[in-house]
Amino acid sequence: MRRKIIAGNWKMYGNLAMAQDLIAHIVMHRAAGMHVIICPPAALIPMLECDIQDRLGLGAQDCHMEDEGAFTGNLSAQLLASLGATHVIVGHSERRQYQHESNQDVCKKAQAALRHQLIPILCIGETEAEYDRGQTEATITTQLEESLPKKLPPERFILAYEPVWAIGTGKVPTPEEITAIHETIHHWLAKNRPQAGTIPVLYGGSVKPDNAREIMQLPGVDGVLVGGASLEAGSFTAIMEAGEEAAKA
Ligand code: PGA
Image 1 (cartoon, rainbow, N blue to C red):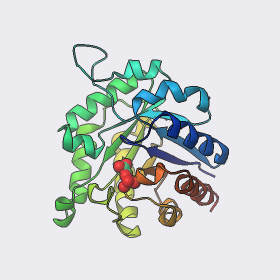
Image 2 (cartoon, helix red, strand yellow):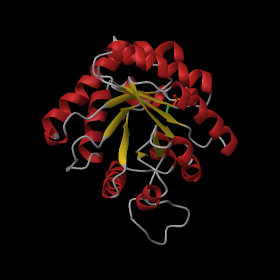
Image 3 (cartoon, rainbow, N blue to C red):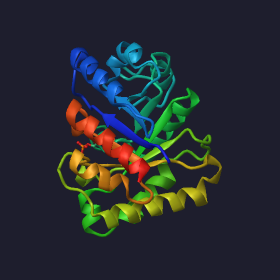
């Protein structure tokens, strides 16, 4: 049985009371066939650490590429690690879009995370226009070439394939499309980063309780990165159960 990774990206939602309540539900539903990672707004990380106590992964949603400096409002990987974070999302499409982060920026952020023993969850994915033009594979390959650090330590890296047009829209690629892209990514990794061991590749974009099991049973899908449905105990724990079933199947 290969454990599925279920990561929740809370984005800029929630507050301390909501977070503690949600974490209590998640901890109760945790089971052997899954590894759950929660990525709340970074200010909550030190406050949730004692509720989590190594039972879940605790991730930030971004980090700066430098370890310190005059960068008002930014958070460094070394700070996040010292607060108890274990993971950090880098290159989420919302940051690529609103903060204009390039593949090169994302690569430096992943390197900063690795310097401080944080496991990067690096996001890649095509826009709707690229999808419509049939450029999904070309876009993904460029993102892999430009945003993945050359040196990756074994077993300390996660990739997430998130088609931008599927995020928060209720639209999801077909099972055949998800399988094909995950195969492309695993193939690229085996060829270009063989020293990194098996890098898990998650799918993200409109994952809900009613599609999570089918998605996680697809070949090459090692788990899911969940946005909207991670903010509510019932839907997130249902996705966790789907992961447990998919790991057993
Ligand atoms: P969604 O978001 O599940 O709400 O589509 C996914 C993400 O942004 O990681």
